[in-house]
Image (cartoon, rainbow, N blue to C red; front, side, top):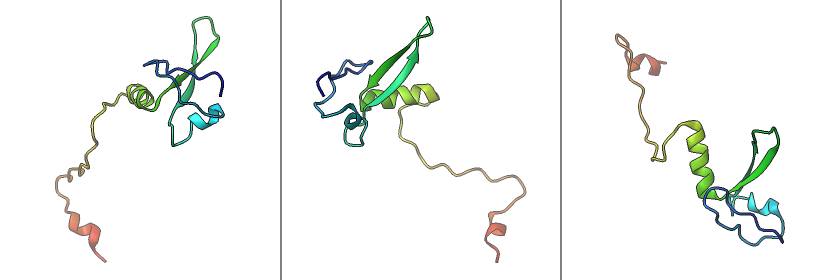
Length: 86
């Protein structure tokens, strides 16, 4: 690929590839999005794998912390034993 894109967030230069499709692969993890500008036009924005993760988490309102399995609290007056009856 002759014109290597830069990450819109951290300015990292994309690795050398044959096509831009290769950047989106699992081995590189770059992502391409469109952003609508105030004048109604669109701009393509490339993000490296780390910046994409942060961008996605920010858009979803989540933090970058490990997820933990949490059991749902039991409702008052119920027992879990009834779920295992045959």
